[in-house]
Image (tube, rainbow, N blue to C red):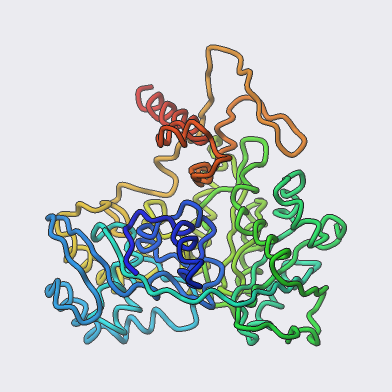
Length: 484
């Protein structure tokens, strides 16, 4: 099936549902994630152990290069001979180094250009284009490989007294080949209190009636038929088990999918920040990685929530920092640098889901090593010799660092010529002034549904969406800072 780059994942799957088909990778942002963006990021989602990444489901790409030429590429195509020759040479002369760095077992993607995939099939340029984050070419359309929708879905719930126990139990369940194992900690669970659309999952999981459970882990088992739970006889340390079936208990996934918006909805200037939120290791290394990460976070005197895709070896960790303060900005850089070093020790991926972006490009060279980085620079030069596509991303030109070009930054203070009268009610409290800080920018308000902001639906202009005022205020603050 061929789709344009702007097709939204939920819209595609709704269209395919009656045919019993779907697109496998299921990102949490499926209500607004476009296929072009998913390809550029090589996105995966919770069910990566079952479906892999987006690149595994693309059979052909239509792209535009910087000089305006349009190409279609698939395995065995004769298009782009210069680039194909380059990848062939890398597979011939650098396969040992690439294989040594990209050792097997990682479920999520490697950061930068996918040399590990390209060396296995050098004549298929889709491997290097998927995950290139818009730095090599513009994606116009793609031919997708669809998968059947599962006949039945079941959910196993396991409650634990500590995160360490949950991480260890993950490794003990991997031999059952779960489609997903999701970990959610008490910090995130507590944020669901007062959320009306999460009342049903809360009642189903009884977490509000089990305050002693600090965290719990749940798994999707998506297969043709689900028999009796094969893990029912296993003794998992500290685990209290329950097995449920769709459709009721499947709504518990809302909590995991809404993790970011739940966490950033907290009051005050200190927020869970992005800098280490998608580092990934091999699932077998997850307990040791968590223990090392917990020690690091504690040493820096920080708080953090730990949730994410345990079966994929990925935890979404967002340390709570106030980026208006110079001291917290210093800690922001410290935690980013030290986690980058920690992930290297585990031979994991610095950016397993969300891409390197402009923020973490500065860490890529140290993460992959000079030789691998040199190969990536050759790929960039071959596809985009004039550096037109997202200059400074993935291949650094020193214009971006993780603690520069922030929306607000140290010393920011909102000055208004009037007393704010608007308020936001949430979770039993009133939040006044600087309402835009409650927006995390995830784009959930861009959904085209009857219950969404009517001004956005009518105009199609993002400034008229719920997050519009936040972006407007942020731009105003940046202009004022540069002029001041």
